[in-house]
Length: 246
Picture 1 (cartoon, rainbow, N blue to C red):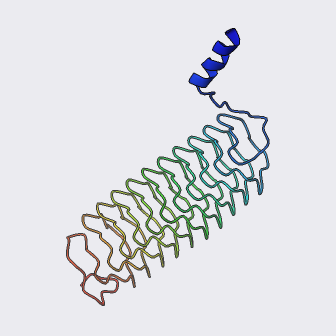
Picture 2: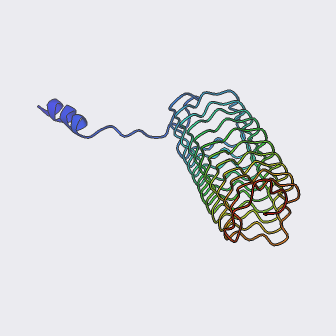
């Protein structure tokens, strides 16, 4: 009878999964809160892994598979994640200062409220992602793709995003003050109520972009394409507008 009651208790109450910090890297591994500082996980398969609050400070995760992994509040300061494949990964509130994310694939990932200060993200595809209220100040985003991504209330002060693709991105109420955006694609992007003072949009594509109520003190639009853009005063720029909204 006691055996029956023991088994019944386990049938009623599900077994709770706990972090197993000594487990080898594998899909769905649970390293919640574990310390993996300075360790090498290059080319590891961590698909759907639970990596919340994990310490990956200065760790190497180059070419790792992190699709659908949860890295919420993880510490990835000074980590190297070049070439990772991380579709639908969660980096919510993660610490990513000075991280390397070059040639990475992070479509549909979530970086809301993360700290990406001084990150290097070159030639990566992070389209359809979310960067709500994320700090990307002084990050290097050159030649990366962020099309259709959400940057509402994000901080991109002094960011470098030369030739980056922000087409159809939502950047309402974001700050791009003193950003270097030369040759970037902002076609049909939402830049309303955005701080753009001191930003360099020279040779950028702003066709069909919405800039109403944006702050553009000392902003450089030299040779920028402004066809059908909505200007700061809600005026619709005429086709053929280059550098100046006509």
